Image (cartoon, rainbow, N blue to C red; front, side, top):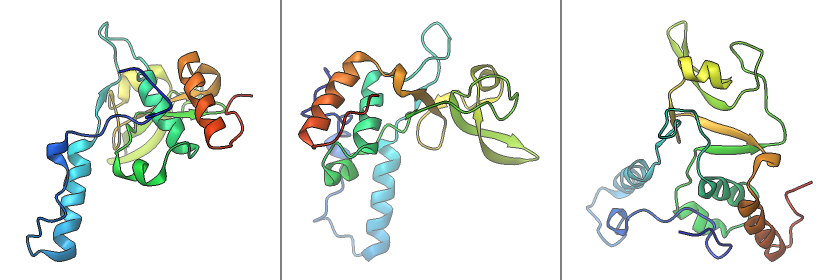
Length: 172
């Protein structure tokens, strides 16, 4: 599916997973809350951190566009709330250093087990390959990239969205 400014978010989950607001089971707020949680858990994207050759690889452009459209308010807020985000990528001005080796730029915002506790950290590709979750998505790892690394296709769509919403360009 081509990326367009008309619908920059990832597709909605299968309509059979949508909550039916008219189906009141009598559980009140607790029941409704449970249904919403179930919906978002069923819709959560878990994306492999490695490509078909086994190499660590960034998520697809559609995920990058979804992130940028949400983080820069380039989509309708209600639509963004109703459609779960990919949660696989973020775009930063600069990359931090790896929290473990302190030598390479971090590419992943993830979790590692330290002293028996799961703790968040930034990992470079080598440390991530050794200790990371190896999955991208909410509650897993997030691939970090810079604005300079955003593809020309995603840039073109973002430029259209910025003009539509009266915002300055995202690119320096």
